[in-house]
Structure formats: C-alpha cells, structure tokens
Amino acid sequence: MVKLDPIYTNDMVLQRDKEVVFTGTATPGALINIMYSDGDEDGVDSYADENGRFKVVMPPHPYKEEPTFINVYMDADEGNGEHSVSTTFIKNVLFGEVWLANGQSNMEFELCNSIQAEEAFKRIEDDTKLAKSIRFYNVVKAPYHSEEWDEKIEANKWVCMDEEEAVHSSAVAFFAAVRLYEELKVPIGIVNCSKGGTSVSAWLDLDTLNESEDGKWYIKQYDELVGGKSDEEYFKELDEYNQTLDEYLTNKNVEEKKVGRKLSDGELNALIGPYPWPEPAGYKSPYRPGGISETMLKLVINLTYRGIWYYQGEEDAERHPHYKTQFIRYISFLREKNGNPNLPFIFMQLPVWIDKSLDNETNTGWVEIRKIQGEVGVEVDNAYVIPLIDIGEYDNVHPVDKRTPGNRLGDYTLMEIYGFKDIEAHPMTIAFSYSENGAIGLKFNNVQGGFMVNVAEQGKEISLAEYDGQMITGFRIAGEDGIYYDADAVVEGDNIILTSDKVPNPVHSSYGWLSYITCNLYNNAGMPLMPYQE
Image (cartoon, rainbow, N blue to C red; front, side, top):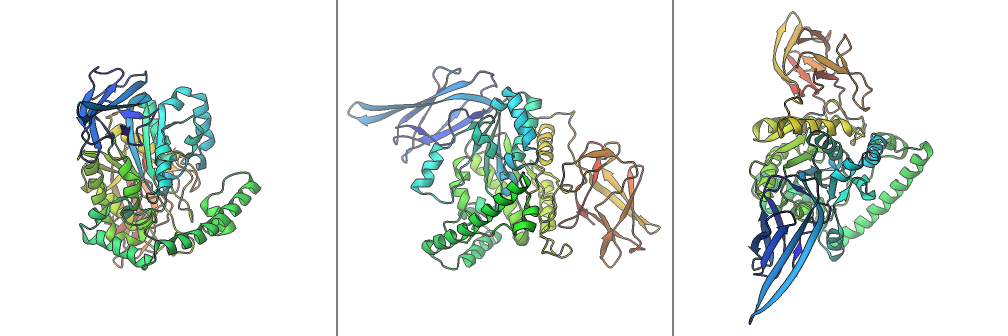
C-alpha cells in the first residue's frame, strides 16, 4: 500500500514556483507516480527504496486560484508477472507561500490567547477568502514515539482559519501570514512546529549535538538532571507534576472567570503563584536533547518551504555560554535536512523580561542571548534578526501583544525575501558615538528621516508618535569604571545626546542592555533601535 507522510493531507498549501518534495512509504522497490490534476498527464515517477521509503520531486507549479487534486499511484512487481497496485490522493490543495514556524513558547503562543484575538477572529469571520487562504498545519507535540502518539500524528491535518482547531495556531505566525496574504494575494501555508520550554538542544538531533563540545555539554547536563532514573520513575514523577499542573490550571480558570478575561502570566503569578516549571527530566521527556527533533521536526522538515520563521532562546538564557555554536549549527542543520543550503532563516530577538525574584542588574541571561542573536544575524548568510527590545512584560515571559512581532516579521519578510521596495522594515543600528563636554553623542544607521517614540504603556500594543520632546528611555551611560546609569536622551537633528548627573565624564553607552528595560525609540519607519553596548 502507498501512503504519503502525515503532513500531506487534504487542504494543504504547497510552495508555488519551486520544486515540491513528496515523501512517504510503499512496497520496497515499487514504482511511484505522482500527478497533479492540472499538470502533466504523465506525472513524475520514482521508486521506493529497500526500506519502503520514497521521495518524489515535482516540477514547479504556479499559483492558481482553483484548488488542485493530487494523485499518488504505486505499482509493485510481486514476481511471476503479478503486480500490486495502490492509490491514494489529497484534495483541495492550493499553491502559494509556505513557511515553517519553529521555536518555543512565544512562537507556540496561541492566537486565542493574544490581546488581539477578538479582532483577529472578527476579521476571519468577515473575510471568508482570507479565512480559506491562510492555512496551518499544527504539528502534534509528541514527546516520544508510541502507538498512541503515532495515531495522533496520523490523524492530524491542515486547517483553514475558519475551522475550530485554528484558534490554537501560532499568533505570531498568523499575524505574519496576514501581512504576506495582504501583499502577495496568494494562499499562505504555515507549518507550526513549536513547543514551549524547549532548548535549541531539543531541536538538534543527537548525532549533530555530539559533533561539538558545546553540543556534548548539553547532553551531559541533561544526563545529570535525569540522574539515572528509569522510564518508570520518570512517568511517576510526571504524573505527580501533572497533578500539580492541573491544580494550577483549575485555579487559573477560577481567577479568569472572576474577571471575565484571560490573565497574563504576570497577573497569574501575583494571584496564584508561578506556573509549575520545569517538568521532570527523563529520557521520554520532549525536552531531552534530540527529543522533538525526532518526534516533531523530522516529520515536516522535508516539505518545500520559502523559508523559516524562528522564535526561541528563552530556555537557553542560563546556558548562554554554550548557545551560540548550537544556534548557528541549528540553522545549518535545518538547511541540510531540507536540502536547501540557502533557505532563508528569519528569527526574533528576545523581548524584555525578568522574573520578579531576580536581580535585573546581575541576571543577564536574556541580554547574552540577545547579544548572540544580534551577532548571528550579521555572521550567518541568509539569516535575519528582528529586534523585539521594545516589547515584553515584567514577570511575564509570554507577552500577550503578538500582533506587533507578527506584523514586524511579516513586513521584514516582504521586504527582504519578496523584494517589496515600498516596505521599510530595517531596524536602526548604532553607527558611531563620540564623547565631549560631559556627554555622549550618537549617530545612527537607518534613521529614515526622523525619530518616533512609543507612547503606549509598557506591555500594551505599540502606539507610535513623532518625536516632539517626549522622554526617550532605554539608554544608559558609564564612565571609565564601567558602571552604567540611566541616561537622559535629547534629540539634536539626527543625533541623540546622552547625559547623566551620575556620570560626569561618560565614555560608554548602551541601549536595551538589561534583561528588563523600557525602550521606546524608533526610526521614522516604525522600527526600533537594535540593542547594543559599547
């Protein structure tokens, strides 16, 4: 019998104008033919290997408004002139733009939980074409392979945005997809392969981790957490953890019913305490090194994509000395597994956050991850970093404004990947600084004709206004002793002048260089200044 891999289902979106890869299983050695209903009537042939795996590469197909029917045919030679024939098909397939949305909880964060959920659902209800044109495949979050989990994977399907299951799609990816749909006028397919709480080491496979000392460190660290416990001991701990989690979720529902709305993590922390974390460590945990690389990513990485959207790093803040090599390796790993060495990789820099129990001056894990992300955006070809230093919430690791990062991701993609010259989404960066008369002067790249400031409260959706003497926040300066203090910032033309009564002779400056800090400066295109420290 011939069978496509689980990601190939009715209602899917395939990448237009590029060769499209189909994979699946069949009788070893069998002839496989795949044919589009509106394509070459002969289709494309291939053969299943000795393990029964096949790969068929179909020629580029343009966008068409009408859906396509795809037929898969198998002919297996059983010997003695006998043949075993099998067919399968998928229907209502559209050709458009396909992106892999990958990462941890802020990419996973569901549309129904964002502060823009009501507006988003109203638009989906009112715009039926958009609702049918944006489609998600939300990868099953299987922690390990078992009959039960494999059945869930087999039953999974692509969903249009007007289907009930779509409310659980990634909010960031949805808002980015809307921007693409608005400008490109073609279907947008999102493969949402994300899982909260995951280190980069969970997405890399074990062979790749074992290539480097930093990768081996991740494996060793996790082995020490497991401490030799058996799977039975792990599942016992997991049952106890889930009981605690159920109590937390019950209390959460009670508090949200009282106020008639969803509460942020910060609000819940104050009312019922922090979310129970971390889960117990074990070799059946999805957080083990290589875990969801095998059970989630491997199932979808062969599909043909225009590129990858990535939002991750929170879980690696305390492991930052080992993160950079593995992050860079993960980008190349994805490209290798997808068979495209130039696959665009667009990723979000971490927003601001600090747990209320931590000291903001000394707990710099998120600063270090942002620094690494900024460096990777410069050092790795076809990798692009999008700053989020202007958003985030105190004591809430999951900012509920997901339209701002989603729109920013969509606009950057349109500008950089699709060549929209009328969309400007480059952030400001520091060009150079100079010290004179007890002040530091700053020059910037990409000011775009002037400055803007965010006038909304921190944690709310961004609201920009032209600079007109408002307070600019996020800058700090230091003298030769290297001790930084908040700076007063004044605009002079395209320059910004920094001063502080506490630093009479400043020689160093920074912007956004704390785990949690309010940053409100933008260029005239509405893009923030990249965090820096000099």
